[in-house]
Length: 618
Ligand code: ARG
Image (cartoon, rainbow, N blue to C red):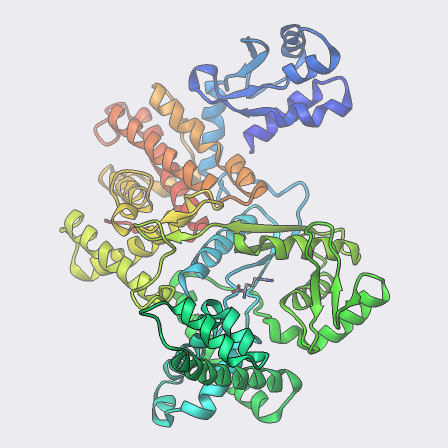
């Protein structure tokens, strides 16, 4: 059962004015300090303000009328009008006993099940997937798992960037720089090389445009002498001379233009480019699959941008017909209230945009799945795009959908700069995972020398990948965070490693205690919470459903991570105070074994929602 929800409903029922019930229920929260009990209802102050009455009087009235049975007696009035609820020990004990035989650990089907589309990972294919995509992949996977566990219908959609300008670059590279043998041996590697090669040849065009912008514009107007003079001033004494700049610039611009034309030919339906695109795609997907397998990520659909291409013209026509898009300087744009800038849906050269594709995607998703909610797990820098997209989609008629941009911050290196490799590339994801597993191997070798080497290798994979995921998910997703492998795998602190060790320790306790696990489940014993540590642990175990609920209100996996960390702490405190295997009273021993069993189960389940595995021995 969801204990918090139970109290919210009961308090709401005790509020006479129906219009005030929701707000009062919302102000029922877990207590911030155990000395105030387990839950607090803090809504009396707001009620009093509205009615210009004394908050203590109102709280007193609610306290004497609210019915919290059988979980608690009347709440206690404190301070200016707080109502403190202490859950009855007998109630905790009987709920825990029920949990033992409940495979769902207290989760009930949702009152309003919804269909949720999670748009996540969504990398641009044919480029090495970089660390920026790791956050989307990890956070999106965790949200998908949590929503599924809560009983919602989830559609996991990898909205691949498979139609963008990177293909023009690869096509150009393929036609000009291909090493056939290398391509036959390892197409993925060769395509990645071609992409990088094209990129580095185009780079001087952008770099010079940025630095010598003014001079280049003069030259374009035919004022070459003036341009040279301006360039000399910009370059200073040790800068490149104008001739060199122009040579580099012209060469790079030519490649850029050629790549642009390859993209245009692909989009325009050119046979050869379409054929090559279709040839490249499976290789690109294979490169991604390796990463997804390793991360335990799977999608229901992978409908990339290319899938929507045939629908784009119609989207623009429809927007125009409904008066939502108009011509502006040769382009077609939507004027949005959310942001000052217009949203371009067709460029002057006739090309459609990222936004047009996203609009087509929404129309397709609504028609195919009729979702109540669509989550976009995408970098916070795309905030403006999503604001415009959501506004236009609502105005276009899809206002029944709850659109959410689940934005996240940047991963930083230990200097606080966006994480990059030495070459200046965004760090390859595969390399990061390998490094994490190598560091984990050191941790496991040191802490678990008793395990055979093959098992240590397996545990290291679980610990290394788990550490990377947990470091990400335990942060408030909106924040940036520093990527620090040593810290991520600390044995003490808010890390996956700490929780994984707590789990393995519990498994070891149950083995040594020779607990009859099947018996504990099939005929659950009476639970006895004789010490404060047992009570605290028991109460925490009952908070799983409310934790999952809360984490999906704001789409924040860190709520689950915090819960698991404090649960592992509560377990340590319990185990320090309460013997299990050496306990002489057989009933107490069984009750404590049951607490161990449940804690292990909740830790394992909770970590699985974060996409993190556990080992039975560490
Ligand atoms: N491919 C995009 C990128 O790598 C992310 C796509 C996110 N999803 C979407 N529906 N726009 O930046």
